[in-house]
Image 1: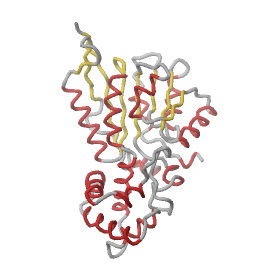
Image 2 (image 1 turned 120 degrees about the vertical axis):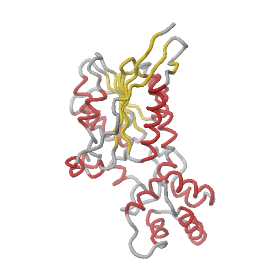
Image 3 (image 1 turned 180 degrees about the vertical axis):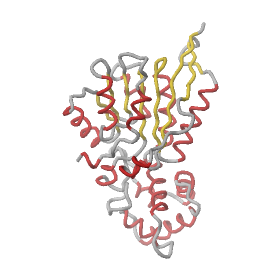
Image 4 (image 1 turned 60 degrees about the vertical axis):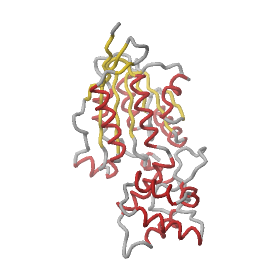
Length: 310
């Protein structure tokens, strides 16, 4: 099954940034453990004195990476949960501060290959839920949401120029037949155009639904906020994004918190983020050849500097 979890993107760069060599006894959180590729190598670097915490909303990812790390002799604490609740999840295991936080926002190959609705390359139920305990599925959105709601999703999350045309086609077709599977949805999209529809356009449409279903952008904003409250002085935050909307959120967050001093707790400590990557780091040609899914990745890193006052 290892081949069905994505190869860790920008692995050496992640290791260089997430582990501040000045700090001893690391506590590092991988908020998106996936197949454990990043966590495995982080664990090797910080053991035996460090602590590794692995979080994911996907139960399949948790089960797989737990076994993978165990087989490689890496001790880690695993938590199934939404990284937007990072402070709460860590408090449940009595962790109040950490030295490093990693967010890899990409989907795993396992999700694309085996979980329902994420890929337009195979016919499955149009689901797209990362956490299967969540009620709302993608086909619920397609069949039940009104014109205004659908327009918003495809415009804001997919950045699709002809979003109104797509919405009208969905509304027209769902009156005739319920849209249940990925192929049902693809037939509607393909019916809008003569000839083959570009994969890049299909990816945008599916991506828009996935972002909405899993509340990805709001979750990202929340975890960024909580991360700076958890990091110790010199602690580092690393984010790998794959979508312009995600990267924009990270870029703006880093910029805002690098220019202004913010209260960290009770008017005694202030913090400022030192941006370590003036421009986002992207995979080189060799990595893209080895792992095509890395081609849109952008890595940004920052370090927390705490200012003690009176």
